[in-house]
Length: 231
Image (cartoon, rainbow, N blue to C red; front, side, top):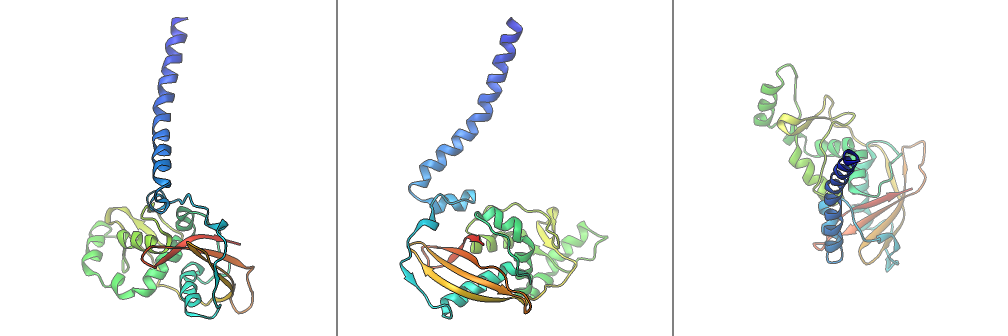
C-alpha cells in the first residue's frame, strides 16, 4: 500500500510540474490580451481579436492604389502558382510559404544576398564541400516575416527549395530566384476598423483559381500585415 501511495504521489508531482507552465502561459496571455492583443500576436504568433466579425466601414475601388499595394503583398505568396494554402496564424503562413518568402527576398535583393563575400566566406569555411553562392541571413528572414505576417517568432528549418544552415544562421538555395507569372484579379476590397479584406482570384493564363479572401491587419504606423487567408 505504501508503495502505491508513493507512486501515486510521484505521478501527481510530475503532473503538477507539467501543468504549471501551461497555466502560467494562459494567465499571461489572458492578462495581456485585454490591453494589447496585437502584442500577443507578435510574441506568440496568434491574435485573440476576431477581426473577421468586424463590420464593413468602407468599400474601396478594386483598381486603386490600395488594391495594388495589397496585390504586391499577395504576390509574395504565389510563387508562380494559383493554388494557395489558407492560414489563420503567422506560424501556419511561414510553414506554408517559407520558400515563397525567401524567393521573394532573393529576387528583390539578389545582389545583397549573392554578393556578401564575408557571409559566403564564413559559409564556405563551415561547408567546404558545398558551392554556396547565395546566403540569406536568418535575421533578414525574421524581419521580413514580421513585416508581412506580424510576428517576430520564427522557427528556422529547411524548405523544399531553400536549405537552412544552422551554423551560419542563414538560408541558401541551389537555384536562382524565379519570377511569378501569376495574375491577380481583385474582386472586392472592404475596410473595417482594424483590417482590410480583399477578395481576389489568381490566373496563370490558362486556369483561374477559386476566390480567396485575404485579411490584412492595420498597424498603428499605417503599415499592414497578413492576418489570415481563406478560400
